[in-house]
Image (cartoon, rainbow, N blue to C red; front, side, top):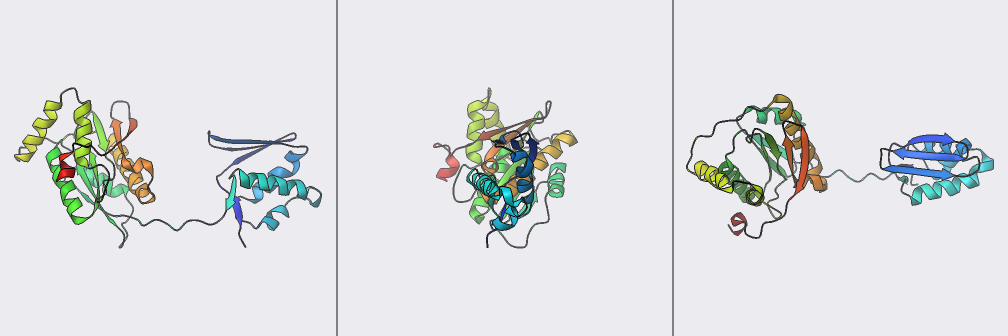
Length: 263
């Protein structure tokens, strides 16, 4: 027998002949019916835990069960109440974090213990603007058939949490750099950094504020958690502005001229 439950943690407000259900700022439902404030709240409160339809209706007086049954049908139609049939959990990534600076350690501390099985995901935590090293890291991950994620505090004034790069499709780190190049007021500097890194030139680490570093680690953990469920945020580039602590999300697409895809 299927059981019904509230889809979200709704706040119930009963007013004369009115029942309001509110979940956050975006989901608001108002039902108006004579005496609904007297029995409607009891019906909704009963569904905070999974119950059979008959069991939920038994929580209201027999004289109003026909009206309660109609309200329950409306709640199901509006997806306020759903069948309690949780989906099986998506496979969890086996995460490894690489990087020598403090950012890598903060990310490791923010992640739960990795499972023994599941698809691999490698995180590259950078405290420099060594984009050549990130390109090489991405190539190696793609060759292994692993997903990977780039996190950087190298730019100092901002931090980056890249999209989850999949080995078999979607934008790569070369596509990320192409978007940087298009938006940069000085794209020649990006090319100079790439060439410097390819020659093995020294890069001076950034010293990001620890609070900002913690935000980057939290964003990384959230992305890794949502990635197996194909959540759109996991595949966007997130930018943290250190001065204001503002975080913005930027969708990415495959760059048709990306040399990494041609390789």
